Image (cartoon, rainbow, N blue to C red; front, top):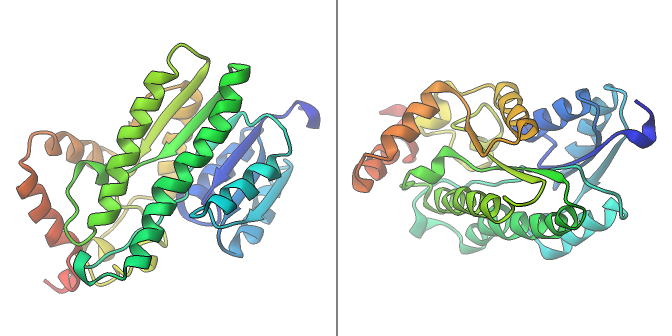
Length: 262
């Protein structure tokens, strides 16, 4: 495919984990890439993506801030974004009352504020030209009151709900909105969230490449949502009929500090 004819995918949180795999798959499927993360590793990831033979631009920016989102939007340079893969996210474990509130705000601003601001800016452009795909990384955590990860689970409940609502608002356009809901995945998430001493932090997790594969396919098919993995599908099904107090207690057993030793 000629360079000028390749579609452009913008992928956030693309330096590691699910975002890295989503960017890799997009490149392998003929998308040029604009990738962003808030860490230096985004440059190393971009070098990997260039091996697919597509054009790759990398930007280090803090998408927890309005300024970081605007910096990323400016990097688009007026081009059409054919696929927005809004994957950037952050977690935090531990008892809510013991957490530093600045850390709490950073989780909220990364998972919610920066995410929906970027989606609004690019979504408006897509609506204007009546074309585009949006993939939002939510989580099955949005179904579960997350004792000892309360803010993270709350942000994902917001994102899951937001994605369905946005899809409905866009149903009369040619812009698709797809929600990817992973479960616990083998990424750096649990180390960064300070949850390596928890049962969920030490348990076997899903492969991020597998999660990204099903998410990318769902986006390209224009699906509403996809829960990756049969165990996660079962968990969300059960969550719909399980009392919230019981769900919170179950999550406590997985996420309470020191639960890895219980």
